[in-house]
Length: 235
Image (tube, rainbow, N blue to C red; front, side, top):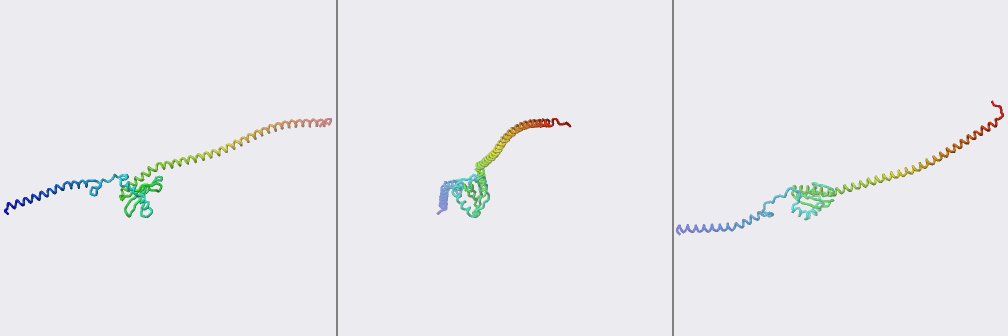
């Protein structure tokens, strides 16, 4: 084989190889684009992490599902043991919020309850998130208890007012009884005074009559004395 033929065969082989490479690359481009689209899709294992939720106590959709998925029963079961630690508890009226910690699994339970009955329970391993949810639950207990506390205060005020009315009525009854007695006694005294005045008037009349009788008797005595002594020598 001469030199030209050899060069011609080498060039042909190179051209075939380059064509195969370009075809393979072109075929791979749509697949690469599809893969890039999957990576960009949220919620896949290859996607970048989603932006963290805002630093508030509002529940995420997953936490809301958690709360309805049996966390209440789970926490009630765990409380019967001794592995839970109570980190914080807030009471407002009959409502309360607790932050509990399960050290064996580094898990936090945040509970909202009323009269010792769990209402909502959220479970998380994020300590910062647990604190935020606890603060939100504590704020809810404050709001929820406002009407209850107001009702308690109004009941106390009503009971106090009724007690004061009863005491005032009792005092009024005693004063009325005293006034009745005083009026009765006044009537008795007035009657006695009238009777005494009548008796005094009668006695005065009797005294005047007696004095008249006395004077008459004295005159009679003097007259009789004079008559008796008549004709006797005088001193």
